[in-house]
Length: 595
Image (cartoon, rainbow, N blue to C red; front, side, top):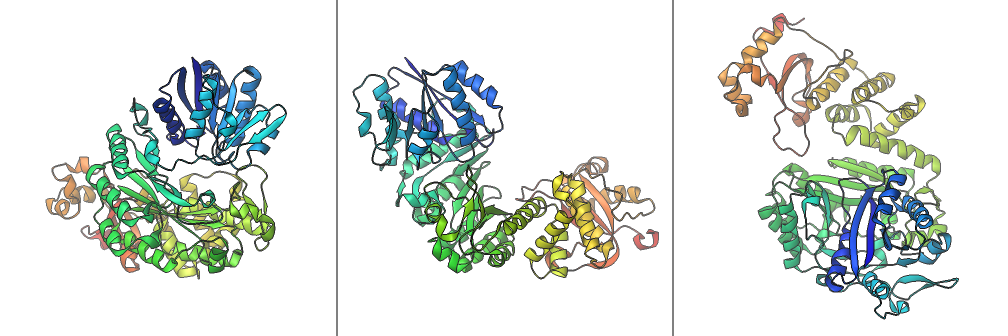
């Protein structure tokens, strides 16, 4: 009995590997496990390599196979190399995108690797295993297999591809308890209709689909297993509009309580699709939309077709529904995208106000068209994974550094949604564009070396205030109130920092209790707390006093001066951005008693 261990290092504990489960299900179906004992062991990139090594050793595999990606490859090499020293008789096989495009070079540098499978590995892996269990298979006939013959390293012609995807047995079988509350990767298709030169999907032409019956059956299995999120890994989920809508409708009928994440092209959404998305419950769907650049010359060079006006229209329409989290991507470092044209791309996307804006940096992936043309554009990039760009002919490392700082601030301030109202006011009132604000704020962080240490959430509020003060922004009292308002929106049990504007009203707490004891007030503002006593309600809400009325800013861009009491309600209404609802309320003799 051959013991086979399939392993990888996931980015997070909550993730699960789809590739390993495909391999196991394929071998179970087509080899009927004859003479084989196949196990899966998953780890994370944050796990201690020594502990991973020990766990693999306890399995004592005859064959050890790793799934390799840019985020885990260096650690996999370290672990596999050490394991070969301990158990030299174990056969080590690697597959995945990180080893598929230069397998001979990888094996030359790492003599402990016995085989590499390039491309889709299910069928090639099965044929290699047949060789190990004594069935006569000429390994030189296995497409995309790199192996050793004496001192030579040989790569067989071809690339592993399964044309009929329904031939791949479902990877979601057996004991499904493992999947509960996890993020599960799922695909309904392989390939991409586009040819973007930074992406590995451009190396294979065309799109292949699993049958709709297979897709629905597997989705029902995952829904019943109680997974936390199903992350569709289709490169362009909505490339077939009718198919996409059929799956969306199926999930609308069956998938309540689970989040489904899709990578889509927003400019492929037609009017019927956009109208349908208005019917989707809050939190059921999440969209990742790759914009990458709005520079036409850049998009022409990388063979990327995109109608940004259609993208913007679709994103705004979906945003107005307030039911789908939209994550928009930009890539810095693309060909002929200099610092100034990237500024325009950034502003174009930021002004769409997605729930998350991810500012990424170009990675010259093995096998990609851009990596092959790196010299043409003057690229310099890191030698080891993730092969991130350090500069090119039109964007120097100095520019990359600036954008790295801006990326960090977008993550800390914009994507957390802890500062939404303050950011909107400051950018609208004092800066020409969002990029101008982040550029200036990044310079402030750099000048004060703030990037060298970590900061608490409370400290981030103070840093933003100090920046405004340093920039000589007028009316700092208003800035303090805006920051306090943002703080109260996101803190259910706030311990208000003393540097915020603090106002007092005589008998304020008693008046708040009196407000909560009035049935008319509860009916008007807090009907979901009906029947609870004021003592119970006060645990779920907060009252705070401000020197400005900020409650009209988000909808009407209106702020007026004057003592204002705001009620913050933290009841979870299932909104895509978790924060309090708020109401301006009147307390008796408020203005007379304030001081």
